[in-house]
Length: 460
Image 1: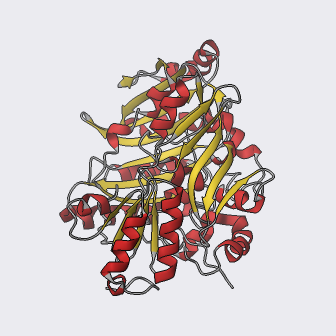
Image 2 (image 1 turned 135 degrees about the vertical axis):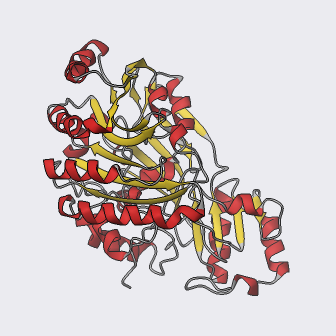
């Protein structure tokens, strides 16, 4: 086997590999090892790749050594954090995986209201540490998501309309770049790199730790109200008006899912603010009509962060497509409702996510994440358990994507890019900041060493 634009990993002498193994504090896993099949598998079962070397890093020195070894031997490199990576870029055939999932260090500074976490930490792990001090920061919608991938792509989450994206709350990061050097990126330190990693994905290096600003977050009002699919059109029209008038404290999503009783449309929400004021804000929702299910209550923020975990276990087949909506029009609503009625898998879902608020008050050129003006994001997730069901589920997604095309903008949230979307879609994800990102790729990674990502090819 040969690497993609790399040399054959099999050509490396065994003694050289063993010498590399001895240099690591972490673990080197290779084909034939008892742990190999577990170590190479990632969240999305559609991805079935066989790396030659999996470096399960124990510290920054392991990361630096792995980059040096891969560069010396011309190996393709994939970088794995602590979470999902639906697109499958966290593993490669024949090359090297730099696996950060064992880097779990966390430290809260309750006086400065900051938290520093290592690159293998998940949002659930970060939230647990922060909540002990009554603090939180914007971080994803599912607790098993990794902090690294989410932040590098921008970072939507339940607190985003009040406190901005995850990348807007990033204060600094430790980054090992393609030359094997550790750089500290933040205000006043490597500011171009700091700009690039806040939305530019994994194109610029391996981020071994992140420092975030924390906010005081007590109990929130959160949960869901669900209605039978037959009411979908009325529910989404209500949702459109409800979110148009929503204060920054409220983040609310409309979702199509299949419950044990059948297909439903639900509004999922988190209100972060005064509970009394939140009850007033939610009164129109409560008065809209009797739902089939109402779980909204005052709960810890970590409860909201785990609300969807059971719906996204590892090991299923995932095929996603997403774009920002031009507007949530009546025709778009009718199309979504009609297509979801044909969904072949009860595990699949569609989400319409309300943005705006603090997300939209950051200038599109202040961070690499440029999609600041979007009001709604459209995410369709085709999910199924068995490879024999792949064609029918992927065909449903193709039909849905084609039917929704007139209502979708060209831009896309980089973290929602799916398997095999192509260069044009990657450019659309980075939007107006693409050319500046290319210039910085030329500077920090001119050989495209980090290319297993939603790639920004250098031009030098």
